[in-house]
Length: 133
Image (cartoon, rainbow, N blue to C red):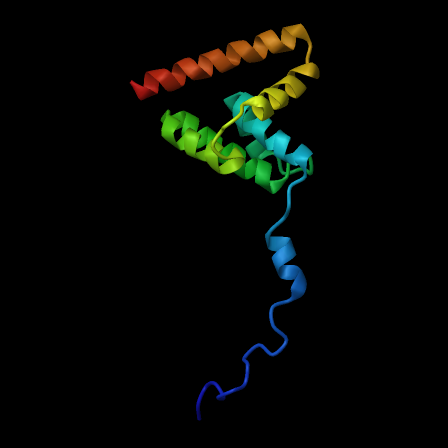
């Protein structure tokens, strides 16, 4: 006997309508800016904390992006970082969106926090440059 009957669907009800909606979650503008902040402004030590955070504070997408960014930074792979940014925000034609995200990030911080974060970012950039040479 044949496994399939000619002319009869093996899945007569089709794919459940909600399956595509669950698989392709649409980000809000705020979530998008959080992801960009994560990629551009978060120190590696904080990214590692986010990866380990299983509470509701960070969603699965944030943990996944944080994991990718940590791997890229540890390898010093600027080409991979550029590719990730291109995939997230597209090729930058106008840097106003990035500047707006950065401004929003810094609005919430004290001057001391900004200085500390900048020092960490400079240290990370130096590490990446050393690895790239």
